[in-house]
Image (tube, rainbow, N blue to C red):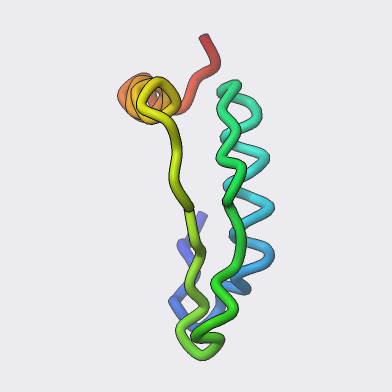
Length: 68
């Protein structure tokens, strides 16, 4: 599957895709959303998380995103 170019990615779609993937790993980023401050850059705001959530996120990435 070809990866999209930067111009092809809708930030709202990216947020929903990331939220779904995180949900499969049992991780919730409450502040996850589209950054409204710079729409031309299509930024996704991951927000702040508590340390245990950051560790679970790191572990999920190390596993390749597979649910525990």
